[in-house]
Image 1: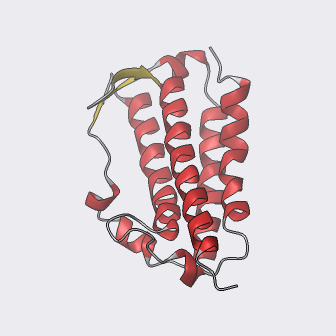
Image 2: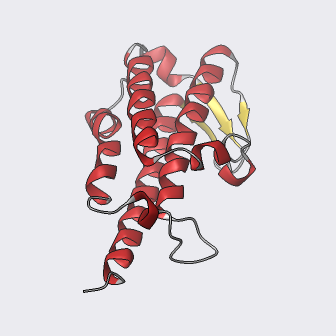
Length: 160
């Protein structure tokens, strides 16, 4: 089974929604936390940038090992995450774009056997790589929705 047309399209284009979602907001505005206990829109973008290399590494392990085990990923425990939060918005968007192209190239070069190799998630169990890609995209879409809602809240709080 090759990657579905839906997965391929979302992999290629879904991340391009970020600039549309944050249009006309400054980096300073995006860094504002709407809820003090939750990430800002900017931190959600930093997380998306930080997670792509993690996912690439998981793909590599799935290809090299027999059903590798992956603990649940938490950005707050990732020593790389603070460095992403310190980057500029423009840099993060560039990193997302570059790393996404790497993901597309790596996955596009795989045959059916490679896409059927499995990895074990600590919470959700075993899935084939093709389902890991779906999981990655759904995770990303959750954060895009979060950014969308935060930007709406920021817009509501703008002075008229």
